Image (cartoon, rainbow, N blue to C red; front, side):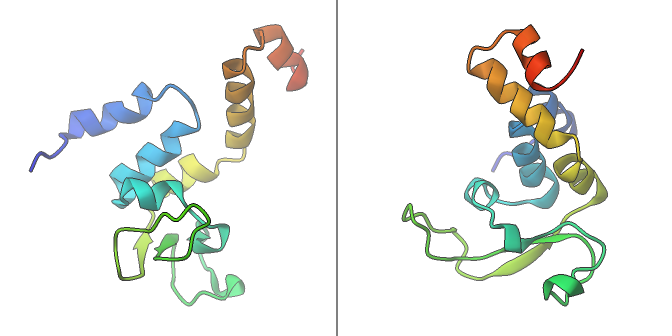
Length: 126
C-alpha cells in the first residue's frame, strides 16, 4: 500500500485550488479521516474547542465524532463503529479561523465569474 511522503503531504494544502478544499485535505492528512467521513460532517459532531462539556460531550480536547447515520443522499460512512478522532492545533486553527468563511465566500464568487473589483466591493474592501 502506498503512503504519501511528508513532502507530498505538506504540498497538498498548497496545491488546493480553493480555500474550501484545504480543510478537507487537512482533515484527511492530519486527523486520518476517510474522504467520505471528511465531507459529510455534522455541526454537532465537531468539537474544536478545549472543553466540550457545555456541548454535552465528555471528551477532552479538540476532536471530531465520526459515525454511521442515516443520510438523505443514501451515503454511509465506511466504518461500522462510531469513534472520536483528535484534531491537532494545526487543523483547528486552519478549519476554524474566523477569516476562513470570508475567504471561502470570495473564492466562490470568483469561481462564479465575478471580477476582482466586484469581489472587493462585496467583501467591503476599498
